[in-house]
Length: 334
Image (cartoon, rainbow, N blue to C red; front, side, top):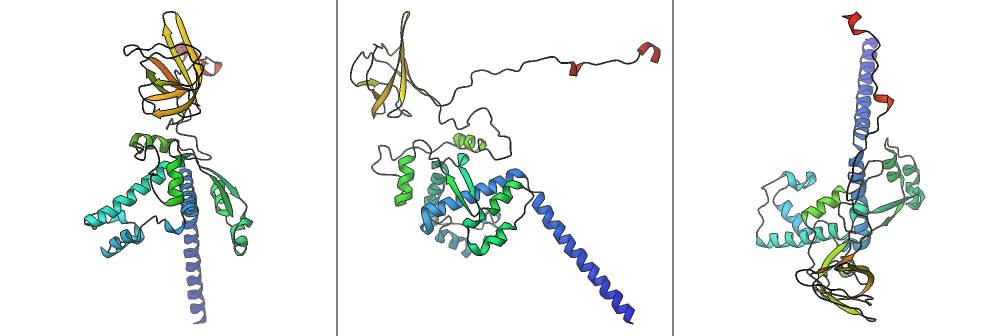
């Protein structure tokens, strides 16, 4: 009888050990089978969430309490995401108004900052709570970048505000308003879907080849181009130039003014000192005369920081690596 109890206990012990080993193997598989791109996106999401909490504090909810209450009242499984209960929520007009308000905030936060170009510096574990030091130091992960991220006690994050959004972003952080009523154009348009997709595709991750290695997809630093249908200059003082559109030009930036009169090519670079309205820019001076008409306007260009790809080609270079050697006589083998 004793042998029977012993064998049963031993079998139960081995079964428990196998179950534990199976759970360990399943956990290891979950850790190692996550692709690198997913890990980098998760890390970027956590950085973004931490930045918003740091800048905006508890007064900025990523999910408004009223919206959450609408989901819970409708018996939505909020623990697994509201998107899996399509059709359960039938919001009334007041709930739709609330959703639209936060929809604008979400879009603004994701577009005002170049989240695809955020730079993060991870700092050592001892900048975290001392009680967690031993635990943090023992964290291991098969992905070296994820392990460094998990072990970091603090981080420095460098944000780049998208060009043209500087005042709106500062106003949002300081006062919680999406637009500054005193700004020249408080109704500045949001990004188009194409621009947002381009910026998303242009995001680069450590250890992963970039999807667009040649140039920035968003292309926010490209040259700004317009034309002028009038004749101006020369002048030793500031000159206002009528242009087709002054959007994108910046005070303090240099513009290249280029006009052609027969064989005379009058080109010069001047600094913008003012942008009075949507159809004028003012430069500090003009050394030359520039003639433009409605039929033949002259170009005005604000050069971009990045070059423009105008052509590309592939060269064919023969090498001995493509030689084929026949070591037998086909006639004899036949």
